[in-house]
Length: 103
Image (cartoon, rainbow, N blue to C red; front, side, top):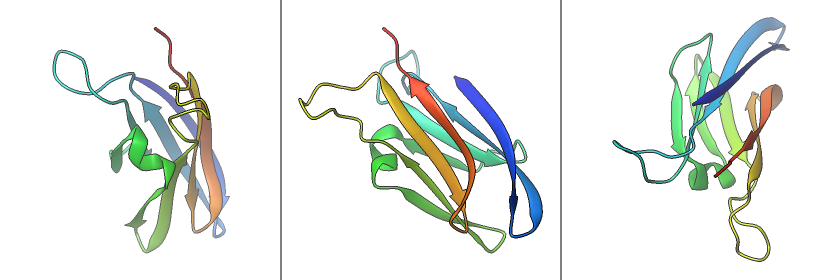
């Protein structure tokens, strides 16, 4: 699992968030990659990569958190090797990262 942490001012307060990605899910490997997000190093969201394409929203302390990544398939229907993912809190960017998948 690879992670990236950043911080920003959200609604006038400093908030820190960490976004992580796995190259696969499941015990002993295999399965679809997963994307994680957590404020202040807490586990909060864990989603399959395909679910993040349309965006996954959850409530955190009365704030709307949206985890969204670029599509998992390229226009030629081949799996992409890089995906841009971002997390917004109340429509304000908190953390973003490019996830690179390598064979």
